[in-house]
Image 1: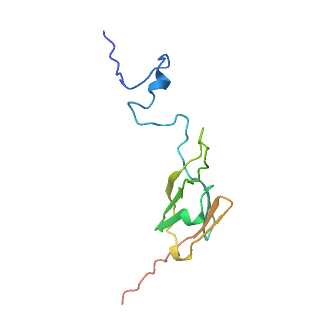
Image 2: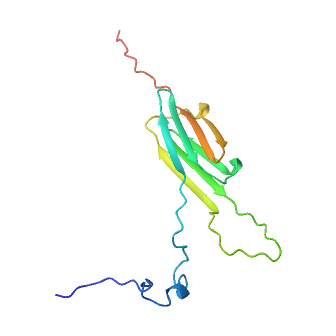
Image 3: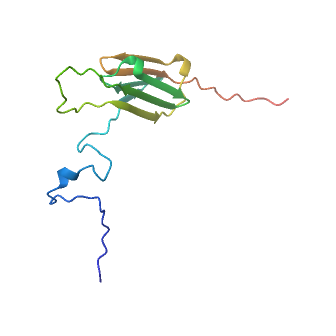
Length: 143
């Protein structure tokens, strides 16, 4: 019985001597080992609401946007690259991230958007998200 193997013509093997030379010529360039930027969060709950701490280092508070819809929270931040280049200077390696990072998550309860608060200090965004007051069902008597 013959073994069938799927081959990717753009896949370079580790034994290929020209791997580094042709890397990115036939495929979109991706920096190997570059982590996907993800906003890391901690969420705590008490009787009144939720407290969210999000790590967003290197971002100005004007470039952070928080949206609340019902029980859905969305955080987005944009890190802008500085264009300052000194004469005679060239960049040998750049590992810092520039671009947009987003994070959305749902919570168990509806949130009170009007009473929610956000603070940003030392690269950490803190959100105070109070729960929306739940209305209790009222039993009507039939007359």
